[in-house]
Amino acid sequence: MDEKEPADGAPARRGSLPRRVTERVRRLPRLVVVAIAAVLALAVAGGVTVALTAEDAESTASPVELTRRFLEAVRAKDIRGAFALTDVPQPTDTPDGTFLDPRALRGDWRVVGLREQPRRATTTPTATVDYTLRGPGDLAGHGELLFAKADGERWRVGNPTVKVTIPYSPLRYVDVNAMHVAREYDDRRATPAYALLPGLYDFYGRDTTQLVTESPKLRFVTQTRDGDGAGTVQAPALEDLAWWDAIDQHVAARIDECARKPALYTPGCPFGAAESITVRTSGEPVPVTAIQDIAWTVLEPSLVDRKPAGRQVLADYLPVVSADGQAGRVRLSATGLTPANQRIAFTAECDIATANVLRAGVAADGSLALWAGGPPYRACGIGDQG
Image (cartoon, rainbow, N blue to C red; front, side, top):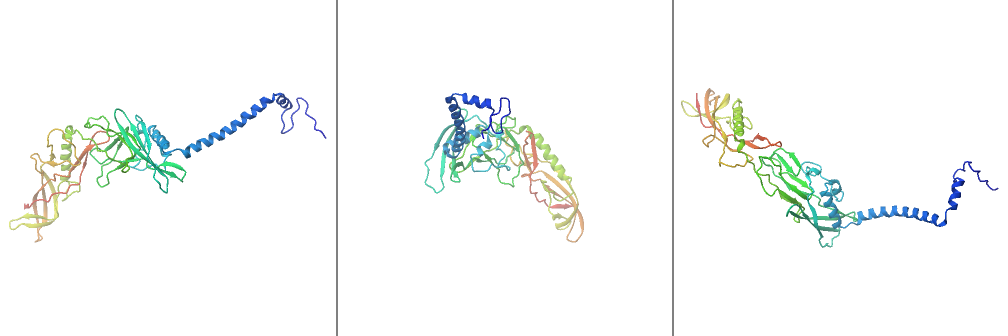
């Protein structure tokens, strides 16, 4: 039985087009219908082609092309994009990853040369690409990136970062481009090394009155043929003459504080006495032990040695001497037991240590930073009864 077509205005059957639409399509010229079908087919095919092309470019990019992409990502401060081209996880711990930060990168350089070295026959495919960077003026940097094939398919950068050592110094901070990072001085730890991406860096380039100008500060950091280290960056010297009075006041205050301690020795103080002191009596000198009733008196205060005159570089430790260039002195007054178990009063003079007493430097905010060293005290001389 033939199905009747719905009258005009009647709803179309489920799954069919309205009669007026089908009539209009039937009236279209055959060439137009064919053209529409062709356009739809090309659109679908084009989508598939684009997807395959992007994936193919990622998997077949040469080491030279990946080197260009990696360096351009670094220059654009796109750290995540740079590490996406490597098989190395981005360091995030301290100090290693401290300067893997866009603030520590600058973009006033460009890639001017790329060349892949001849490949060697190895079981695992590897490649090496030499690159040349150019910065302001005549600044240039040369380095190399090492590649291996990830899963045997895609090339990946194997050495994305460069290790730079910045030793501890009187500067209690590190400057790398626009990053200013405070750090504590700790000579018990190894010299800190930081991971940096290749590029142009300005170390300690902040314009402060304490820093002595050193040129050049601006330098390229690149991966080198003999390893991934870029050497050592030394902190600049300091102009410290304006701080002498403040340093002397600190030394005097510290010695006075130590003298107020009723102990033979207080850790960190530049003077002290042993638990047994030889004391002159009316007879032969005798050792005195079980020392009590301890009191210290500063006889000759210490100052920071200012020689040689003129511009001075703050050292890790400042030598501390008296006004005449000798060791400062303090007097110990106490009581102790003789071998005859007799408690006697005595006094003894002791030198103030001249070395390893005080460290001075510049804090992260540019102010003077002073902190105690760990000086060994000098043994006191022979004491006198009374």
